[in-house]
Length: 327
View (spheres, rainbow, N blue to C red):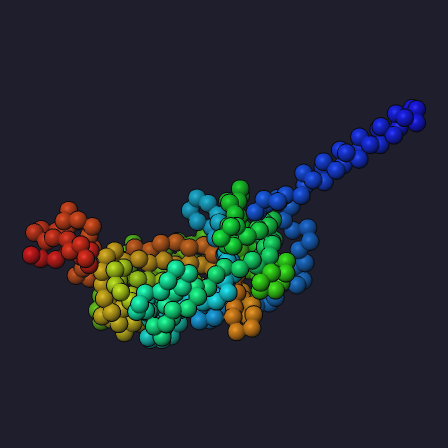
C-alpha cells in the first residue's frame, strides 16, 4: 500500500470511529440499557432502608412502579413544598392516620406563579428543579433519565415488569439541585386485594386482606382510602402497614372518616412498596419501588351516582354530592 493510500485509510478509520462515538452520545431525555448490573456493588446495599419522608418535608420523589400492563418510572425534585399538599393530621390510631387535605384561601386571589399558604398569604409557587441525570440500576434494564422541559422526569420502558421480587435496586444522580442522590429500593411482588369490596359501616372495624409477599420482611403496605370525593377539605385514611396479608382498621377511625363527609364514588388503593429517603437540609427526597392496586369500597346506606340511572327506586342523583337521595 502506498503512503498516500495508507493516509487515506487512516483518515477513513478516524472518521468512522468519530461517527460511532457520536452515535453513542445520546442527547435524548432518557435512555435504557439491557445491561443493568455491570457496576452494581451489592455489598453497598444497606441492611435497612430509611423509610418515607415526613409529609411536611418531602420536596422530591422518584418511583418505579409495576401496574397491570406496563411499568413506569418518573419523579421530580422541587424547591419547596406546595402548602395544599401538606395534609393536616387529625387522628392517629396504631399504624393509621386520618389526614385532611388543606385548601387555603387567599383574598385577593393569588397571581399567576403564586400559591396560597396556610396563613392565607400568597407566596411564590415552588418550582421543579434540575436534579441532574438520574440513573436507576438493578432493574431488568438500566435506566438513565434527564429532566424534561417541565424539569420533571419520566421514561417509558420496554420491559414489563421492570423488576422482579427481591431485586436490589438503586438510584443515583449527577450533581444537581439536591446534590448527588443515592437511594435504594427492592423489587416487590405483585399485589392482589383478596376482598370483593370493603364495606364501611359505623361502629364496625374493617378487616382488609391481600396476597402475602414472596419475600418476607422487606416490603410494606400503604393503604389510602377516601370517601369524600367532592368535599372542600376531604379526609382520607392513610396506613403504613407491615406486609402480613391482613389488617383490621379500628372502628373509631372508620367512624371519624364517615363523619367527615361522604360524597361521590369512594376511592381505595393498596400499594406494596419499599421506600428509601435522603435528608437534604430541612427537606427530604424519597425513592419508591411499588406495585399498586385499586380496591373497591362501599359505604353502608350510601349509593354514589353520576345520573338518576344509578339510583334505586324513585331516588334521584344529587349532582352536587353525587349521591342518590329520596325526593
